[in-house]
Image (cartoon, rainbow, N blue to C red; front, side, top):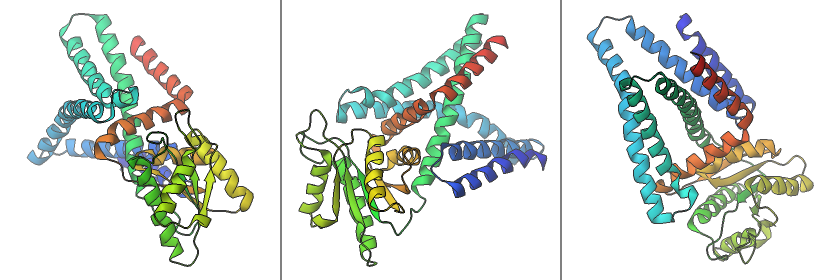
Length: 330
C-alpha cells in the first residue's frame, strides 16, 4: 500500500485546495501529481503480476506515449495550417503549428542522440527532453484542471454577471467569439431572473486603438438589440486587458455592495486563466466559459498556458535551470 501513499497524499491536497479556492494553479499541479503517482503505482502493481494480460497492458503503456506523441504532433501541425487558413498568419495563430514542429524536433534529437557517438549531443538531447517533459507535465495539468474547472457549477445566486470583452470587427461590431460570451451571460441572467432576483450585467471592455467605440458599449448594444433590459446593464469602458476587466469591474461591484457575489463569463479556453486573475484581483466570484469553435481551441489554449507560465516565470525558470544543471552534471 505504500506505493499508493504519494498518490493519496496529492489527491487529498487537491481536494482540500478545491474546497478552499478552486481558482488556484496549485490545484492543477496537485491533481497532475496525484494522477501521475497513481499511474506509476498501478504499473508497479501490474509489473508484479505474471499474467499475459498484465504484460500486454505494460507493453501498451510503454508504446502509447511514443505513438501518441507522433499523432499529437501531426494533429497540431494540421490544426496550425487550418488556423492560418481561417484566421490569418498572426503570431498567435501559429502556436499549434510551432508546438507540433517542436515535438518532432525533440523526437528527432532523441533519435539522433541514440545513433550518434557524441557525448555532447547526448547531453543536449537529455537536457531538451527534461525541460520539454517538465513543460508537457505542466501543460497536461493545466488542460486537465481547466477542463474540470469548466464543468464545476458556479454559484447559482449572484448579484452580478460580468462579461469580458474582446476585439470588435471593423472597430464596431461584435464578433462570434464575443457573441458567444454575451449569449452565455444572458442565459445566466435569465436563469436567475426566472427565480425572481435578476442580477446586474456588466459589459467590460475599453476602446482599443483600432476601435471606434468601447467594446462594452458595442456589447451592451448587442444585448439591447436582442431584447435585454437596458436598465440591467452596466458598462465598464476603461479596461484594456483581462486583469483590468476584472479589476475595474470588481471596483464597480464592491462600491455598490462590498459583500457582492458574481459570475464572470468568457470563452471556455480562457476560463481557468481568467479565474486565476479573478483571484489575484480579489474578485468574489467564479468564471463560466462559453463555447468556442473546435479548430480555434488548440492555439488559444496554448496561448493561455504560455500566459500562465509567464505569470509564474521565476518559479518555472528556477525549475528549468535545476533540470539543466542536473542533466549537465549527470
